[in-house]
Image 1: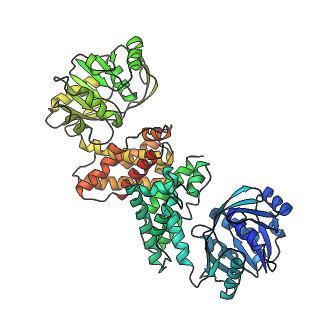
Image 2: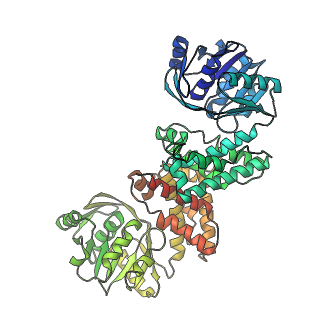
Image 3: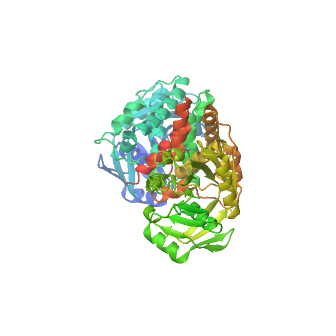
Length: 305
Length: 304
């Protein structure tokens, strides 16, 4: 089978390099960073950290070079989903396209351009070290399921999950993948912007009882929006937040959004808190705290202009 | 008439220099070299007025003679230290507070039984040096009696300020104006400190769903509900104050934004904290102001 990773940043690279280990999978990567593309084509895509892997694959910044694929795995930042899938959609005319991105609204954007869409949530994480080389920081599971309005066939979802698992990226195919997705979105929307606005690490956010109550207020609004859609969370985001605050887990971790604002990079706030607000509106659930946080981070981004 | 201005930031400097044209003015500074510079060079005002005032400055209250009017013009964060320095002295004085937020009068009352005058000021200035302040906005200072202070005395002080070239107005009840400014400051200063935006057009923008004006509006509305629950009828509509201020041309940098950028303690406790505590006292919810309060406190904690 042939798979194209759309957006080969840190997370995309974890899928690309690992899948390239399999003899029966032909891996392509589409990415706009030409130096990264050139490095991958020259010396392969290297992962260090949780696993030492070098994947041999074809990378390109020209979407016309991508051949017809069985699967796409979209891994761009959420604000680039629409343009990335618009550029590459022709390659997936007969295939299925999965998202492993953060936030809400990616499946909808992919479904504008392609027929068979897979809702996905992934927990592995890393960071770019240099062109062609990615640090693999965190191992974790991936969940795939149909995007209900334009679903990929169950057998195809299972085929992709099986390949990922065999490649060292444990992945399960489920009938309803919204639970893990909303659990992760609620977690991120309740903690990332609080870190970004205050400059505090995850652990310090959680040890200030008043601030921790604000986080709970955000979690509660997210849970209410999920419940209104009859989404059953696969775990309580509160437990994940407390778990991550442990000194041996992620006490000193600066949320990715805090890393973004420190270098004045646009954040994914529209797809996290903004996504919860939009789904809340559709289902008649008020989300005043999510709205407030969304507006504050948007204001922060505007202060850089 | 002898007046002592405690704290010579931009507001204190504007009061001191102007009053020195109609009264004998003392200035109590925090730093000794600040007092020395004022004694040697006087205090220059530029901008809306242009003159240099002669006055007497000291950095300890012990060095000061008796005075009839004390104006505590420190930031809210410097209020307790300023009031401590007056405690036990100056029995003939009336003390006027001009701090942002609520509760300054009670802090002074704990230190002595002077008659107290409440004030809020909308004037603004920029301090270019210890001996030079630029008078930028000549918007008024409003004064009202606190506790048993006779209104007539408040009118006399307002008259003195007007005679000195500043704008001032006495009101029998200052709470409506104080609360208007409280809600305005809690909203605008808090949002500015968290976003890094000066008080510009973003604060009035309501076109897109995520525009900042919606949050500003929601914070103002929440503040209105707290005021109503506390039995206060607002003097000015804080939303209109906000819209008007964003149309002034040059955007104002709220002091709370300057404070967080300089990693200084902010006035959040007496502004946003006061509003949240008033909400609790009146049994109404103020979740948005509580969020702003917690986030600014947390930002202070991140200075390290």
